[in-house]
Image 1: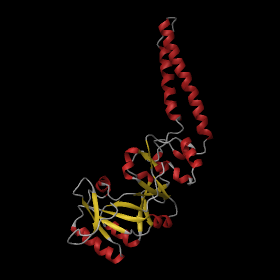
Image 2: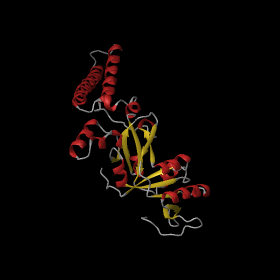
Image 3: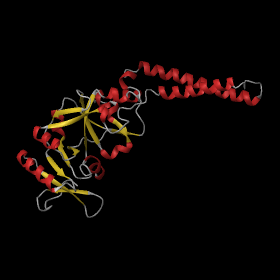
Image 4: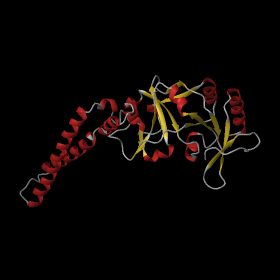
Length: 289
């Protein structure tokens, strides 16, 4: 699952007065984990206990209904049906018992991870800031930079690492929610901290195009708060960023000595390119694409 550590990380953003103020003050917004846009954030299968408990309940109800219907007769057909329900019920009951023991001995308790209903409540102990390995994602420019009218901030990975009271963790993309026992094994087999294998660092593969990294810090507010952060090493303007926003941002970036670049559409495919921004043209040299 581990991807190579990138030299740079990118943060897509809307153009706003908040962005300009945060750039000037050296801040970044960290969102409460309960406010993230993926409803499956911080979601785990709790040792499969709930899954098998559902199976067990279904079998038990079916068996009860069978008895109440007065079908407990000596006919071969009814005996076979009765036996089938009883066998399913006993197997499910054994599985529930075994899985329950795994959950009990496992150090990550159910209270810590939470049920699907309480997931957002328990996840709120953390606030998160998210980044990407790429700055040329058409989808992310559309989703997070207001249809390419915003910007993308480029940060040096090491600068982030040295400025946070936490660690940068890559998001791992999986086909199904992680089981607690799987998280435990991963923690034992790697040298990263337990935080790196927190459920908040696992998302469905549908999100893999984001190539996301994030850091988690203790939450002090139900929505989020501003966190001290290094300034970006450069800022990339969207294809559809207005001229007014460009001029405003350029004036601030000149004061802060932050280079400004312009993204534009490639002539040869559905790709974005980047060049040094100049007020009247896109003249310059391509960078890392």
